[in-house]
Every structure is written in structure tokens, then in C-alpha cells.
Length: 245
Image (cartoon, rainbow, N blue to C red; front, top):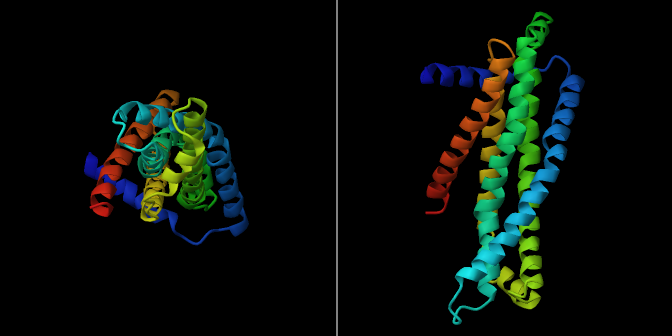
């Protein structure tokens, strides 16, 4: 069963790459998906990033009980936590629920209502027309959302520290640049692109191959979110083991 599903998944990915019947039609679909996946996810990403950044500062300050440790260390911990883990991983897990369920339910509804069959009768490569724009849009917009999450989380951490009197603005800025390694940004972007592909491709697979009715669409959406989150966590560990050791 697992090998069969994996084989169908690979065949689905292979079937996407064929010459488009109409470039303008594909481009329009791609821009529509960029709007659905990127712009409509802005709100939840902003809210999550702001609160994660603020909570990180407060909890880090609570754990630094030794007076020997400088206050600037709080900013370092918040910066590295947001860039390395919170921004790419937590954001993409949330997006797996928001974006993944939408992709799976949309494709599942098209499959159940026989819209996909109608497109195939018209000679359109449905894998390329329906799935490829979703994956391409995810690879473009989700890393942008992750970068935005990094900035917002660090900024919220600074504001939370200043407002609560935990750390001064000068100490926070000092810790922010102290010991900074650009490689961690590269690592975070690698994670963002990997997670974006996982979310879009797995959700598309479960939606594209739905059989049944409305009940099966709901089950496929749930399964797409759960499997995407599991593979995001597995990829998170694998990338950390490969690139940070």
C-alpha cells in the first residue's frame, strides 16, 4: 500500500512536466495560486510570528537567572530561534493546515464532480495544469512568508522586551548583531523550500486521487494535513542532521 502510494506520487510528479497547451492559461493559473497561497496566508503568518517572537523574549529572559549572563544574550537566542526553527518550521506546519487542506479539498472536489475527467477529455494535461502551478506558487510564496516571519518575530521580540522592561533597545540591537552567522539564513531558506514542496505536492496527491463523495474529500484533506506535518518534522530533523553537523 505504501509503495503503491509512493509510486503514484512519483508518477504524478513526473506527469506534471510536459509542454503546456497554452502558456497564458498556465500563467493565469500560477498567479491565481500565488494569490490564494501567499496573500491569503499573510494574516495568520503575521499573527503567529508576532506572538512567537514576543513569547520567545519573555521566556528566554525568565530562564536567564544568572546575573553573569549579559542581557544581549536574550536577543541572540530570540534571533537564532526565530531564524533556525520557529519561522520556517512552525510557519510551515500552520500553512500545512491552511494551504494543504485548501489544495486537497479543491482538487478533491474537482475529481468528485468529474471536472478533472472533463479536462482530460479536452486533451489538457490535468497534472500540469492543476498541480504544477500550485507547487510552483508554493515554492515562490511560502519562502517569502518565512522570511517575513523571521523579521516580524525578531521585531516583536524586541518590542516585547522593551515594553516589559526586560531588555533595553541598545542591548537588544547589540545581541542581534553579535555572533551572527549568515549560514543560518541559508539553512532556514533550504528548510522553507523543502517544506513548501512537501505541503503542495502531498496535498495535491491526496486531493487528485480522491474517490467517493464529500465525506472522502474531508478525509483526504485531513490526511493531507497530517501526512504533510509528519514529513515536515522528518525533513526538519534530516536537514538539521545533514547541514548543521
